[in-house]
Image 1 (cartoon, rainbow, N blue to C red):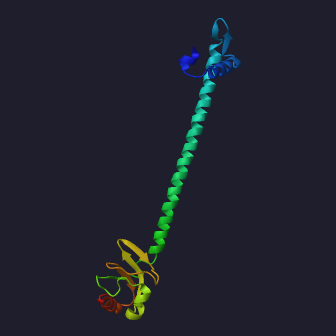
Image 2 (image 1 turned 45 degrees about the vertical axis):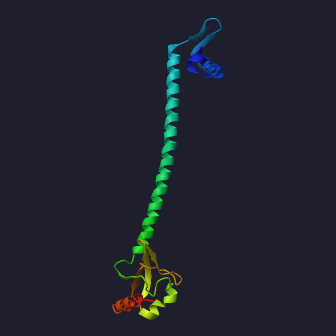
Length: 172
């Protein structure tokens, strides 16, 4: 039977045969079975079915491509925002080159906030950043705590280098 050959429900077979009958591709006789009326009608049906199938495939592929494009657009937007953020942070690189000093073990600065250090009053230098474990904290506020092995990034005229070095290397 067609049900066992195509492994579909009897209702699917009934609908399929009814469709083919409506298009004059087949004729259904109770005693002799299903007879193909015309090879041309059958060929036309297959061509039409192939066209619809091709259209469905193209339609599905188009939706898949649109979804992929949206995903790529989202990734591209994220990368562009990262580039803009990075460029914004670097816009003055080369204009002002900060000095650096490492906070040694036992330094007066360890476990103190920038505000507690009165850094500018004691050194005449301005802290613009702190490097810690490979991460740079730009423009840390007065509550930012300095830790051992932090690298303090600061600006000022050349005379502040010794001031900072002497102040930071003070042992408590």
